[in-house]
Length: 165
View 1 (cartoon, rainbow, N blue to C red):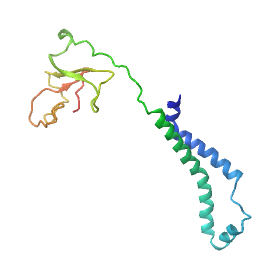
View 2: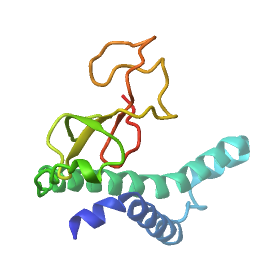
View 3: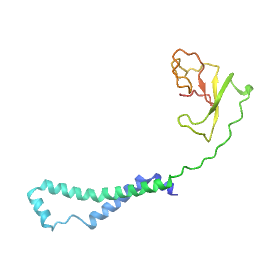
View 4: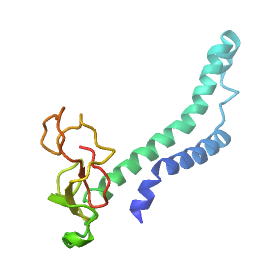
């Protein structure tokens, strides 16, 4: 439940700011009987306007920043530990009679951009059929080297879509 509240923390901070700001301006309006404010208004009306708008702005921004800070602290506590995910085994090795084209299995696929084990792993294939999405100027799959004239087949994930490396 706390995680869901943390996910909408910006909205909650805006709602809190609107409620507190509206209440504050009605409960504690800018005092019109203050001698110093009357003097500022008489001599420099522009400065008095800036002070009046600044006073109203502070009634809305202070609760917003305070609520945002408190919700960020709650978020740190809530997200301190990563949620545990279940890992499943690799899917069964694809039988040759069920594959559309001959393929070479290069290994397993996990996360494409982050290290670590994926909760939903798959097989990484090097297809023998040339994919239209493959380009001769592609980078080599996970080798860190550039391939400019290679005629190697495109690497595809188990769904058959070309991987971006």
